[in-house]
Length: 121
Ligand SMILES: [Cu+2]
Figure 1 (cartoon, rainbow, N blue to C red):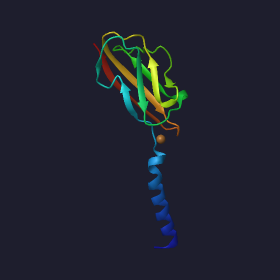
Figure 2: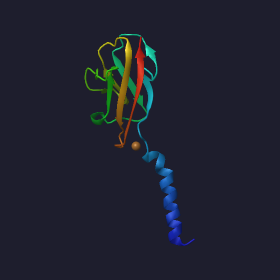
Figure 3: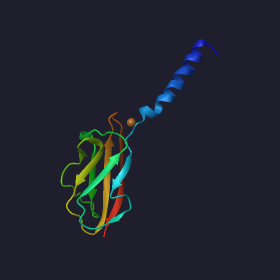
Figure 4: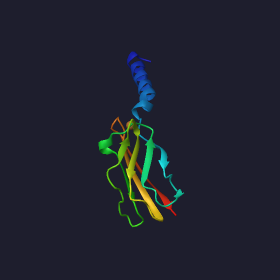
């Protein structure tokens, strides 16, 4: 192996070793209500705790009813002292199915997003 090839192999190994740090995207870990859950009527917020600190300006949670109407009472906010936890208030929910769409922008600027449904009985 030439010295140049050895250098390239070393660089490749370093890049592989650092990949988990580079890809520290925010993934949802605790979702309330949980995906697919059926909860009692009257809940007035949806909250998601992520694996990474979030950038509040670009992160959001939007709750929609079965007809696709957004129900939020305001912008989603991060919890005091915990930048991994995001919450949005909604009017107390009546029976039906609801969709949650979230966008999470982590401190490193990477964006993840997803959606799930839950039911209110
Ligand atoms: Cu990332």
